Length: 353
Image (cartoon, rainbow, N blue to C red):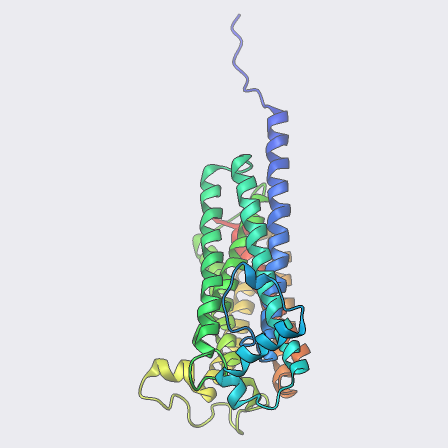
């Protein structure tokens, strides 16, 4: 009598594989939290005009802050040589300088901590083979993205130390923020993918719609970076009208379309407002069209996206109306990251037919 072969399941191996992925997700979750905090502290550093208080790039010895009076005087002397001090802060006392110094120092130290946590985690993941080789390579690429983001941060600071500058170049600030958000999105995507036993099967157009929603959130955050870089939120502090009109006069004043987009305060704020309207409409339309196709899990994600988007919309209006108080501005920035994470998680959950 012949006996058909029955495939045996190695439950111990399966459990070990699951536990290995769970440990990797704990590491990724910790990095996600650190990056979220990093973006908020970076926002506070920008809002308090603290980013140019440390004028040198010393990745190792720069981690040690001034302790003696002489060391503080030395740091203050370096800052007094910057255009920002000469043009904006010539009245600043040493005590006031210490305040902005600690904001920038904290921002840099958190960046170093994130780099260390990520590097150590990646070495642990790859040497213990907690994930497949392909996933390890993706994680390595994400590490390169993180390193690039840090390098752009210094290039951004250097731009603010050039003659005549009182702040960092807005385009470089936006690039720095955008790379941080891209790294954050990649962390969320990997975290969700490693924890997913199955994915929701949907038509390809639906998955493209979810990815499009992520792209719109990302573009809106970049537009917000231009608003922050130019302090464009300090003008036209009414809503829904700008200078008494839905479409204000003076849009795109330069011959170069690109220069108007990145350098004209009126155009920058208008584009950010328009982006908010388009994103809201797209999210609502996407939810209506796909509601019956994504199943209970997908609908829970969509409810989350719409709820976070509603909070973000209100925060944006309040931040504008109250002329960018630091608390509201940071809440607006933080909820933007939550919205990015929610849309990324939804897109990763879907799989095309």
